[in-house]
Image (cartoon, rainbow, N blue to C red; front, top):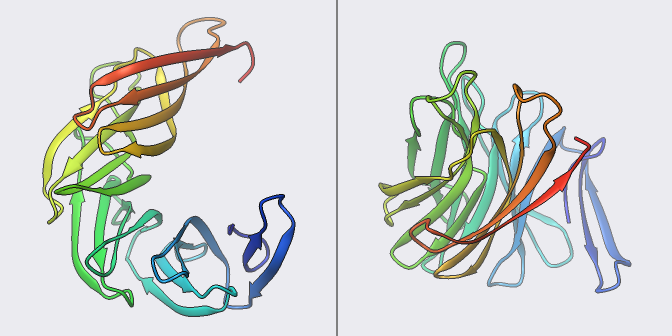
Length: 237
């Protein structure tokens, strides 16, 4: 596991949660959002430098030693939220990219090689509002991306959970936005198999008095069609 304290930290735990080792790195303030096992028995992680809000990708060995760190500078903000290993060498990363001061957030899709060099980089929008890439998974013939965006239908605008599929070059094949008449904030996604993905979100209304909050779990197929949906209600935020 990894994240952020007063420095960059990575921990390896056993199956009962006991710490096998813990490493800290005095290299500045970083916030790490995702970490994955790699096929060579190591770890790949992504996140951002906190002060500059540059994107960052890091590779660790099995003992938690930092092998390399790549920073992707920007004139605005460029955090990286999710990373996945590619079977033909390298990694695919998603996040957001915003050129300050007047730009809106765009979904960032970036392919890098095995040492973090950029092979190509794409930006996408949904509707005409801000959107964020918060989950990515390599599937047959392309990539699945999920995250949050804002609709242009309701006033005030509501946040939406989207599901986007691209080809292997990062070009959009289709986009699905899950319907809701309230704010629906993306929380997490999970790959089940090539035709099953799970999405978790949190919904509430800004205009309905005493509206109860709802945790939503959707299972969708690879085309974004909802197969199963379950709501979990609560009277607290």
